[in-house]
Amino acid sequence: MAPLSNQQKLGISLTALSLSLTEEKKKRRMWAKKWLIERRKFSHMTLLKELDGDDFRTYLRMDYNCFDELLNLVSPFITKQNTHLREAVSAEERLVATLRYLASGREYNDLKFSTAISPQLLSKIIPETCHAIFKVLRNFLKVRTIFL
Image (cartoon, rainbow, N blue to C red; front, side, top):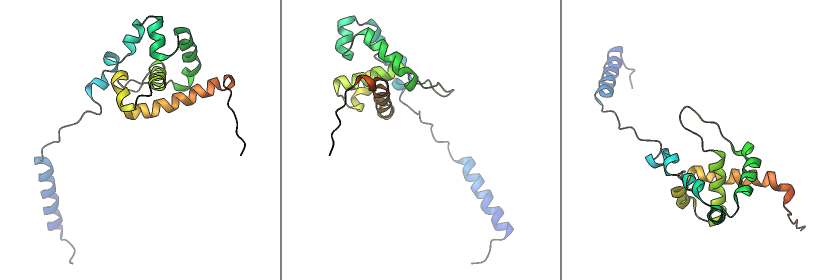
């Protein structure tokens, strides 16, 4: 096959340029659903602040004091920084989502509706938070070792 002449190269370039200019721009898609972006508005965190002691205990399987103490212990391990693109999920929201998952046994896809956190992010948050809980409570847990 013979090499392309400068005139042929110029013709191909102009054709490609004209096609790219006339091509309609693709409609941009959102990186997340609107209700997930507005997590503060749709999350269960607002409800959680209104619950009395018994309802709070039923929801998370622990009282306020125990929750606050656990939050203070795990916060340094699960706190993430905000970026200019989006606001990070707070340590409190991370802990509540994890405790709700452990208390209810619900799937991530189901838990996303009450937490307003995507299942993909929940699949990162919950194991990280469980690891942090284990790390800070390791001295309080008795784990039986089995020798094979």
